[in-house]
Length: 200
Figure 1 (tube, one colour):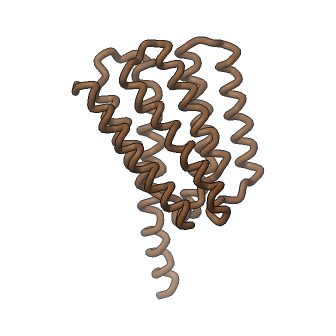
Figure 2: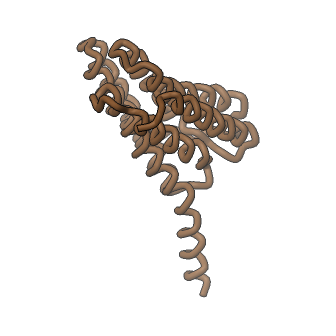
């Protein structure tokens, strides 16, 4: 176990990754899915409130940053209308299911249940971007996911009391960010190799 003050380093990494994504959006290199990023902002911020209620402490800073980053990326997408991914029916369905997960939290009003449903909501919100990252990795910015995974790993290393309130959201963030990083960073190489094979 390491000092929980390392969570601050993770928060800085999250901010750096989000800032890079914002820059890529403003330059037209990244096209965020607004459904995903709206819900990615909403669900973690609810989980952050639940973690505070459950006494998670400084480690909840990671959850806050996981919501704050998508919020500033979402706002940036309104500054460059050319950097927006077209919303599909699949996106809307995932968004509705994600909101349903958040509604279930409002009904239960229990800390751990809120964290669980926030993870569920966040995961459903992630599906459109996972699909987009697989088919069109060039429309994403990998650094935000790499830094998010590192931040989550740091947070997990600070845990000395392994309760769901402490590890639930960081573990989920580690997994989803790792998946997105691999899809965005490695998929283009596979696409290039496949294209070269077809040309020969």
